[in-house]
Image (tube, rainbow, N blue to C red; front, top):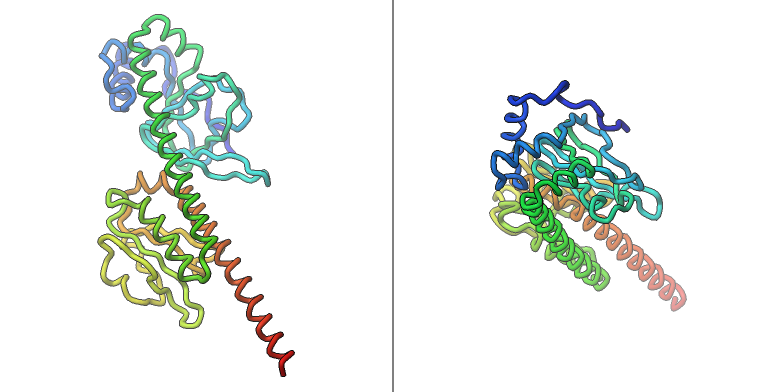
Length: 305
């Protein structure tokens, strides 16, 4: 695992021209978009741009927090260790998103790990320099602080919605008695997440081992007509879809999103993967119960004979 480069993109003193260029770039980011030119120039003096190659670690869970970060261009995945000490994705971030701000507010160690999933440009704001600027210009600092708070509030709202979806899905799958009802329960929660602004169409495919083909179990929205019939292969990649396998292999079933709105779908990816994992376990439980019942019926029949 690479660590993010500590070299700034530009070396040497920040000249007037460089500050203007930096201020112009900052203005394109929503959190700074309302600032005046003078404020932007002040912010440009205290931030640093970092190049981070794909797979670079920005910070690690447990590290002391000394900076907040903004993504000018690229993608960052936020992960947290589970009880088996394995990394679990909890968020996917992209252009304009900020992260690492909580350690500035509570002064506690990092609660998660952040790493890039593609070559990225990251803006680093060190806490010491940020607070020094805030004391000098509290009015502008409050404006930025309010945007950060609104961003945190939005994340909490999304988290609440996701927890509700997980709760509903878990209850529905516990009540499912066959594979078809399990897939349909997932489809119901899946459709609540994938609104028209996320994807023009979405479809759930289940693999039928007897026919050896994928069968559309559930669909909604503007799904291409060619996908509404049974087929032995998934559509060609040029149809622009995203696939989320259920279980180790797609042939056990998969979630297919057509013409996905990439940014929104990317943010939902960790949750959709969790949905697929829960469905996989539910299908295994249903299969196990079915096998036990079949075994018991055969045993009872042999006793009668």
